[in-house]
Length: 452
Ligand code: MEV
Image (cartoon, rainbow, N blue to C red; front, side, top):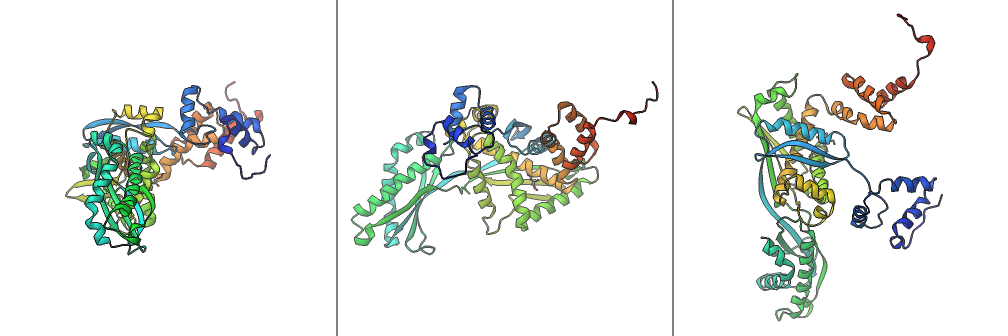
């Protein structure tokens, strides 16, 4: 086995050479290569698409692609594709979707779809003077980017606003160009970043060319130009509502009133306690990330934004809210979701394309509504379990197959184990012990024939 060293020129190797090189770190090189190759797509054209998504690709990493059916969203039924490895997420989303489907379903509202980008610059001068020149600077920036924005404008988007922000109270001489964009059905990262880089050039030229600036004021040091993944204005709200009596059916040991009371307390706890809020919101992102992955969206951007939004008041807290009042249970999620349905992986990844087709080729705002509904459904499912039978029962039931696979169970063993554990607590050791028993041949001396 090779010792690990700094590698120079790895990216220049072809795929087989890379595979071969990395195999040197394994005890059995041939097995490693065979294992990785076993995940190659049989269709070479498709494999090439996957290879080219990223640098230094040597294989594919499979995740389950599942369906959470029966989401009634604004009166339309959606069967939502989810890509996630955590065994209980699809089941929880599906169960919640079904529960709400005969109670009016999910109701959504798009609050806004604006996105933000910034040019961060250092400049020593009179900001009041600069502000009076903003209309001129803005015109120049819009003119300079007209080629880049033409298509977006034709689709109803483009640059919505350009402002100057004084940040000198934080860092001496630090200012921003803060631009607001409308990117219609695309997530718009490339579009925004291309515009921002042009803005930065124009800003520098503006300072050097404008007769209003002299000497030191002509120097502007652009530090960076980049979109912000914090999009508090790209916001969707999704809500569900039912009579408290409708909650009677949830748990045999709790009345609807008792369930609603416990549920409300659980949400309140996630409002005041950061430790709980983080896990609570993680459950929301279980669903949202799974939709993002299935549709080729950037789930890291979506998560980063959601968590920042959850801390917008200076304290990290639950993204969902509940109101139990006048016999009604109202429960909602407000979340920024910068999603796209054109461009990027959405059209390149064959399954992302298929996911969007299954969803009826939605626009970005439609996809925001769908993802938010799944997020709310997963949060509902999690809290429902937590305040009733606990999370582990369902979770471990779903995890049973993973345990069986880890223990190399055969199909027959799996079937027997599933039946055996129907009314028992699943744990790794309990399953292992059961399998040991199942696999141990019974000694002939211990068998008694009562009817030979
Ligand atoms: C597990 O992936 C998610 C939960 O922990 C969420 C929650 O606690 O609300 C069940």
